[in-house]
Length: 516
Image 1 (spheres, rainbow, N blue to C red):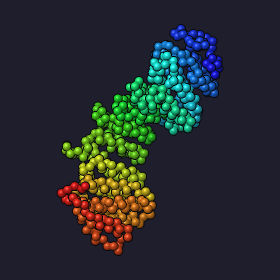
Image 2: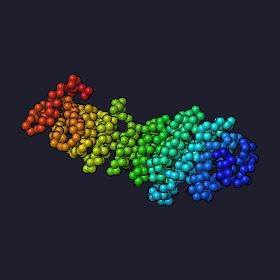
Image 3: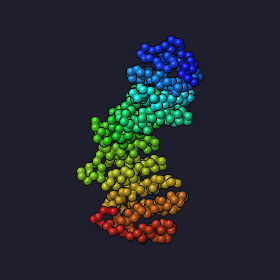
Image 4: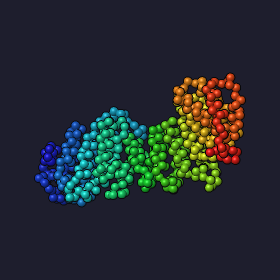
């Protein structure tokens, strides 16, 4: 189908096929692209969806077959960008999500039934346009392409990100088309992938498009209206994680407030998403910039308040996030160049140990236990300040099984192993309590029904901890274990004890030298 046939099918009035005074038309037709855009926009507003779908199909064909000099006439870049920008915005409006009139931020799924079909139709038109912009041989193509892609890429990217994720308003087809549209945007801007386009890796786009994208989202992320559009927060989160170090620091003032706002919501999913945004910022912004203007302190208070929750999905993201933030706020406890005063590391650990002591839900106990070993790793020797409470937690958590995986016990044994390694001089006085708890664990494991590989892992970890306790006590545990009555224990337990008592004391493990 040629351009004349397309314009005829679009029912362009004869008055709109007259030459436009600001440019001389070329080719075998006298139709101004600006007037065609205006006519299509009017028809899109007044027709039913079935008729709109036909118009969109014809518009896509128009972009594919139109002469380059007609599609990109020799006019000022500002005029050309304005025509295309308003036209693209009018197309995107036909796949826009309905606005929620309350603060619930959720709508019934049936309200989104026709959105995937609309999104696919609009995506096809935008892909046709981007394909022409990426392969345009017209004399004005270089300048026009740079101008148009910078103007159109942000709004098209936001539209594609809206329909990219698995949400009630998307389908498999619309998600696939959205992914292809993002690739087309990146290629049209001269980038190999979308993150490069956002951060500005190409020679023609050093600044990237992060600020332009965020400027589109910013009016929708205010305190009063960010819940009205269900897709806005998902688009913001997806866009944010595309921008990493070192580019993110340049946009910290733009992304920091919405992330805090979302994390402070009453809806659990929003809290989780907000904390993920904050964690991404912590990992990809230099510590000095986070400490500037007291941002890190604000972050700490916001995250610490979430530690009082019992919601597992939220704790799963808050604990790693606040652990990484502590490295920004405080010097490493392992640093010997400055006094090791109590700081926020101790505050967070005290809070975690308090909740671990009184927690009775297996799932939460498992979560806390898995977070404990990396935290002990970061605290290093200063863990000795908390040995009394840590000992109570370890003993209590080893007593309760969470079959069949035994994740809690394995994590607590790993925490005990790290504690002995970094605080070995203080372990001898705790030998009676910890040794008795580990021996009880050996007996319990041999009596419980567990998968063979899990049982082997628990036994190996327990033996390792007993060996470390023996090393730190200069062989005292070995002497105690040698007096165990072999008639009162199973063969498996006796074999484990034999591995402890039969292991040689490593050279260099003395009361005046550290554990190696």
